[in-house]
Amino acid sequence: MTDDSAHDKPRPGEKPDPSPKKAAIVVALVVLAVVAAVVVMNRDRLLVHSDVTTPTTPTSTQPIVPNQAPEIRSITAATDRIEPFSICELECDAVDPDGDPLTYVWSVSAGEIYGEGPQIEWGSPVAEGLYRVSVTVDDGRSGTAEYSTSLRVKANAAPVLASMTLDAEWLHAGGSTRVSCEVSDANGDDITLAWSATGGTLTGQGSAVIWTAPETDGVYWIAVIARDAYGGEGRRTLPISVSSGEPPKIDGLYVHGVNTDMVQKVGNDWMVYQGRTLNIICAMVDEAAIFTYDWSVDFGSITADGAKATWVAPSKRVAATILVIVADEKGNQSSASVLISVETCTCSF
Image 1 (tube, rainbow, N blue to C red):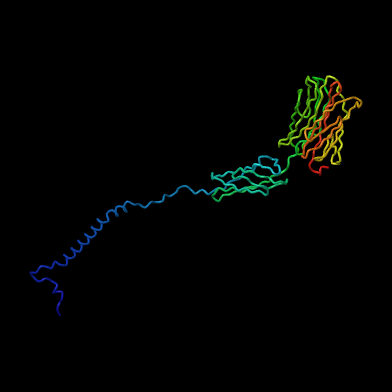
Image 2 (cartoon, rainbow, N blue to C red):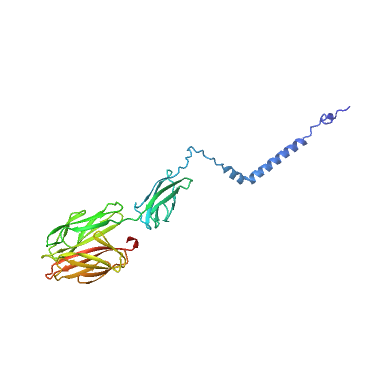
């Protein structure tokens, strides 16, 4: 049996074969050269990638605060007496704890809404009654609040001056008399009274004042206006004569309907349906004396023949004052008036 390994050993006097080692070195050098070439060729790319750093997300140290819903404090109307078929301003008082901007959505059970935002205008319905107004407020972050309230629509009743009286029938120049009135308000509103006169001076306030006549003879008007806080007002006037001599005495004014029964007496005044005709007669205490009569009216049309006047009521709801000034042969004058309310609804009779 022979040993094959003996053939791999160099013989005595022979040098070992260096070929395998050289080949390994050559291969290693080639590989290094290729790697170096690749590095040189991609130098710019490698530099760019080396400059890019991966951002790191900072860790928040503040706690996340949850959204807070807005709060509605109130809905208020510009007036507490809303007339039917009128415009009333409504305002929503709302706040947001986070300071978020708010949007408003309004709704009403009747009537119309004009505008948007915290302030709108409401066109009230024609019928009186209690109506619901609602608003929803949104902060845009799923936070909402709702609020509703009831508003009453009711026509304002103007003050009524039931009467106005003078303590004196006539005065000498510079004389004085007490003037008073009776006034009421169906709504129980506070009433203010404003007095005025076409001549002379007025002293005092409230439901009774003192009027001092001027120095010139004539017929003067004293007026009083009663007003409530909602624009309602009533007005009444009375004439009074200032004369140097005793004026003629008027017994009274007598009112009669002409071909109509839609006329009636109300206290010291009268009420008639629109467009109707009335006769007014001025009766004198001294029927035998000769007098002249001067008739006038502020509403409607009037014609006269001496002590008798014919008046045609206007076709609208007003309070008309018919005045007559009576003069005797010496020029002394006295006056009388009657207040007639014109109604436009037959239900008043």
